[in-house]
Amino acid sequence: MRLALLKRVSIYTVCVLTVLTAIAGLLHTKAGRPLLARWGLGCPMRASPEAIEAARINSAHTLRGSEVAALRPALGFALDTMTLKDVKAWAVRNQLSCEDKRVGFLQCDEVPLAALGSHGPVIGQLQFGFSPASERLVNITAWRSGLSGEVAAAQLNTVATRMREQLGVPTREAGARSAAHLAAGAMHTAIISYRFKDYIADVSATNIPGRGLTLREHYMSARD
Image (cartoon, rainbow, N blue to C red; front, side, top):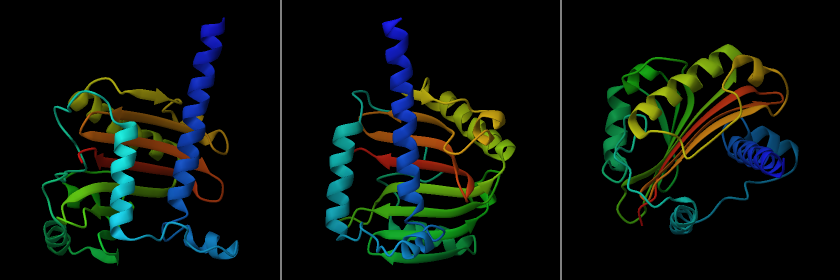
């Protein structure tokens, strides 16, 4: 009985942290900035590129696992190998609308999955983070908002299946990846996470009030 209770508490905690992370990320997207303005707040995450990179490394040290990943899938991009110049060239080839939001941070809007050699719902915002010293790609986050339960569940399951084929069983998994669960109420969430020594990935769907189902894919290098 005690073990079952601890398991339920652990799953609940993972879901809560995922929801808070998704909301924090959403508030710093184009869609979320009006909410910050309405609340009379500026962005609390404005920092130097060096400070942001230090935060990524500290986060990687805290979150990463002990084994090296056999693969490091990241929407078709090569972490620690591709540069800012490479990603901008990809954007030009695919006629995408992209903007340097700050040094080391590039955002592309309304990215069709055809540009990534795949298919599925358009990525509303695709964000790239680069190491300030080398301009190498170290961080990718993809956001889709306003999805129906069916679309969110289908895309989440597509990504989960592909990652399981490439990486094996997730390090953590919580919440039902079903349309019924995700659409049932506010803050209903499903998440899969992978933790390796050199790679971190989180894919989640969260029912955010006023925004509908929000799908977030996050891929990060855990190398120093």
